Length: 592
Image 1 (spheres, rainbow, N blue to C red):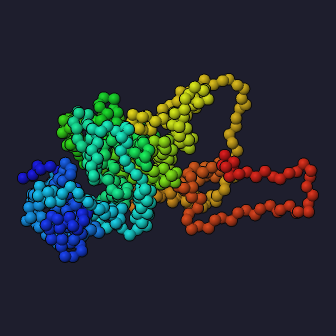
Image 2 (image 1 turned 90 degrees about the vertical axis):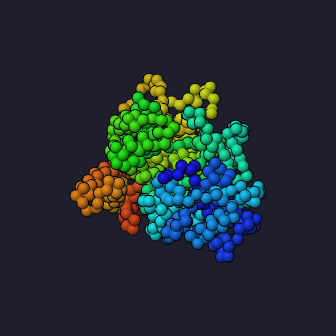
Image 3 (image 1 turned 45 degrees about the horizontal axis):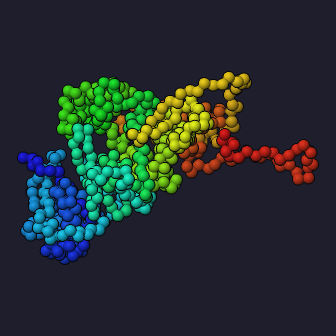
């Protein structure tokens, strides 16, 4: 029979109490160093859980659970350190225990314990805990959610360097509550925990408990035993409700939180080779909240249509909070599929975990851009908490990353350009300038990006065209083709390699095996695309792909020899009076 006790916490090991607090409880501190450290961590986990609305701590009494160290990597928790410590706490009356508890997801049985009144009385109010940072900030889990060792590959080393660099940028950031903006009834700041109030649409109040660390850091978690699956970053500030995060201070400055609007929909449309021209969650018939939940749950579900509808109808928000029916879930899901017909095949295919892998890499690129610009930024999956005065710059960095990602997936689907990015920054910065002068008003037929303060999102609004003043103008002619600065054969080989990489990416997502008939067809199509694009580039002298995506030659290839230069003029040759030095173009002028 399933026990319906409140949800518990996993036995944590990132905090420890001092040795004298263990002795104050009347416990044997243990003989070996590992035993001593484990008991200090267990006492800290029980004491910290007692300060929240989830005081129960889950642990296992099965020896197999600790075999291999998958659940507690690089930690002192073993069967011989955890179970004897739990027995000592139980015998001393310091904890209440429940054995054979079945978790809510059906896994188990597990045991759970929570601090008793005697535990809290002996411990006292002056609880001092020290933080133990994880040894490695990159974690991988298998299909069952069990920890597994990282592969010894260049990709894993590159990802580890990336998250370590991000953590170096997080470390000096100071986070506090902006009491000029926050209401006192929405926060409770304790000596260790922060409590933040959240009010849902029905007026129900819940409280989120977060435990700030001495310095900021995040942990990246990959799933399915793959480095490109999941991969999102997790940190303590992500446990705060979104409306409370906007009431924080970063290094003493008020916070804004720009985000990627509809990022997974944008990526799916790019994979399908189509530019998104609609709001993916709004069917025009159903509530946007219902459509958004159906979109994401249906995308992450497997089992086709029935599996997706079942996952939506059984979602806790759908069933318990909104109290909606199974038939209504089917109606909303079908409407979402019809509304997003170009990407309908991705629903019910468990594609979300791979999309999170893409947006996690985008997140790290944005953080890298913020570090280069000297902007403190804290990620919240697909949004970023940054100082308000830098919001426009961060939006520009996000647009650059989104553009690069779209081009990498499908070049024709990116509607972002350098002009849009610069225009976004100008539009945001000029929003605080009084528009008393006509020169302040934007006069452009391009799409400008404007901040919406209510949602904190970047939304594209078409600017109304301005009536042009009639003036005589001469007809323009297309620019003359430029002389290519690369070797055509070498760039075509590089272009082919890029197309093969794309084919391999899609083959992995579609389950196509290399060497199969479908694989051969895709490679042949890639060769044709590479040849066609290379020919067009050679004729126009313009690169269709930036060199960051398609270099002019493959790594390791020798640079082609330049054509012999003209014989230099003899120094003794007389110069004509009207002859001057030849004008030399700067690199910026040449690119223009």
